[in-house]
Length: 221
Image 1 (cartoon, rainbow, N blue to C red):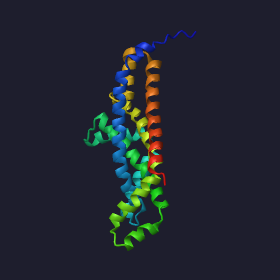
Image 2: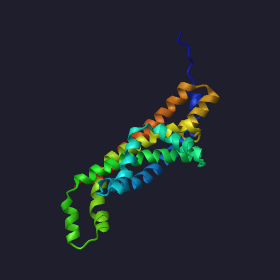
Image 3: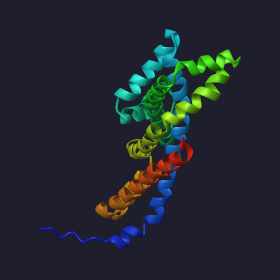
Image 4: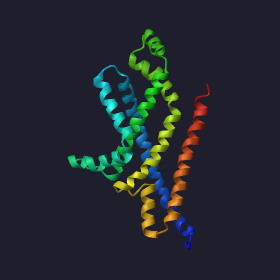
């Protein structure tokens, strides 16, 4: 017979700790996205390059990141690198794993965006005497980011949710880690995880709605 007694008041008392964990989750997600975007731009350009010396490593990165589990990538950063004497803390291992994953997915997003931009624009900029790097930075990149803006937002949401995998390598200061610790001490599993799920949901929806609002302001024309 169902005789579970809900203790929401006891669970809600832990809300400040959960919110502190949520801030760490956001921090990791934002840092992984910033580094992932920077790497993805390089990977996207390299994949479009004619030289195999540039395209082959970039293709390998993208293939591995997109076709292996994110959990595997975090494990490799934490346990795998340890086999070679490189020991990363759970925080850094989680950050490295998510960054690696973000870079691979965003590289394909950016590569698709680059292909959507007519090549005549770059040639027109070059005909005006603009150096290739400057033309790419001032003409091509703004259009690339505009095309890839909403898909990049989806990756941000995915990065937020991926941080929950940190508990598998001992991460205990993000939202998932704090939730697990509170659950072990209080045994209020349903209530604690339900509150954490609501926090994850609100963060993800805030990012999505914020991105749509920003896009409507930035890309009116």
